[in-house]
Image (cartoon, rainbow, N blue to C red; front, side, top):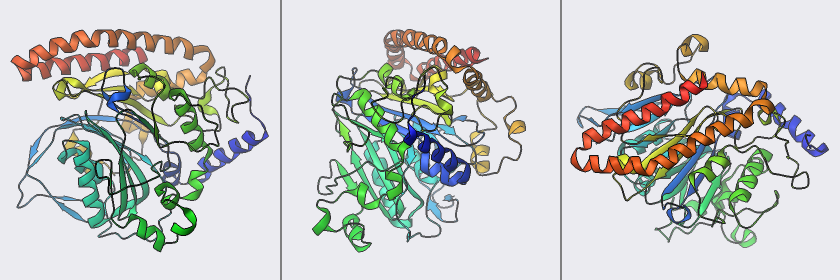
Length: 489
């Protein structure tokens, strides 16, 4: 049985009206993505974790590319940004794994050779007078960070310099950035204002599609970085009044106020915090920026959150309780695992092993509830054929080229098997999902049990022959990709 009261029926109608009446850009800005950032003292194995579900509207494919280290000519090489500004190139850029979604400006994720991972969530700001130099920076921001930084803090510092020098072009966004030592949220406002906050080692921080950074202390540079005039500018724009508003709150001052009220944002944050926190919250409570989880978290616990559609809630809990006998991807309130998911991942980042072995991306293509999370190591040097269209250089040149015939473009692409699997289960969700998830979780448990033994062998191999170890890591990661591909056909 499905429990929805009159209020939630109205919200469902409002949501459906919203996604059909917005342009694609507006829809992506309002409801795009979900992330969990976890400090190393909050996990069972002592790893830093960053989890993410990527949501994007319309027909999509995910292209996987391994991009090698590259040397550049400092006298002649530069990077032309989308709107015309040029950035000076550096001597050598890092190698990395690139998850590309063609056409879109703010949807790619990156994982580099140092175990640095970067993804993002749209967060609408109230800025309407942005200062931009030659159109500012958008798409290239995270790509420059992954190519140039070795740590999360370094990435934040590079980003801050770029934003303050030329300005950021989107309404607003929070970049989730992690390495094997720490994880940061970098919240960017259209124009030249930004703030970043480090997640405490014992804490978990969760973000849907609105800013969650609240209190800011720029004097505490170990945990905060940001624009020097962050508070002064908010006062100037009448977004913050020290006499009546009390302590400065970035979220309240800089957010688009309608975005803060969005039920899809509130509900996803509410259900996810309650899944991991000792303290239980009501949907209209004020949520913490970060919290100590009720117990140290495992990969399986995070997989479960990324698969959530409000399972376990009760009719008395909120207005968004859904029965698992229905298809939650067709309901009105945005869930963590949604119809627009293109992939979900959990980055497991461990500093006591070489990065090639200790930093792993557990990824579920298309939709976490219908796929297995499988390990892809940062040390891989190739991706199987048909997981991408063309090569990485051509992909970058054509990234913003409009796809006129998606069916023709995607023919033969392996991603479409994952997409078809999701559609197959959606057609009979109640009848198929339990069996599919049992199958996925059984394989995940098998992979997790094998992980320690496999990595111990790889560490020994790496000490003797790093290149041979990378080849073996590549072979193993590719075998797991092919394994879930076969299960989807």
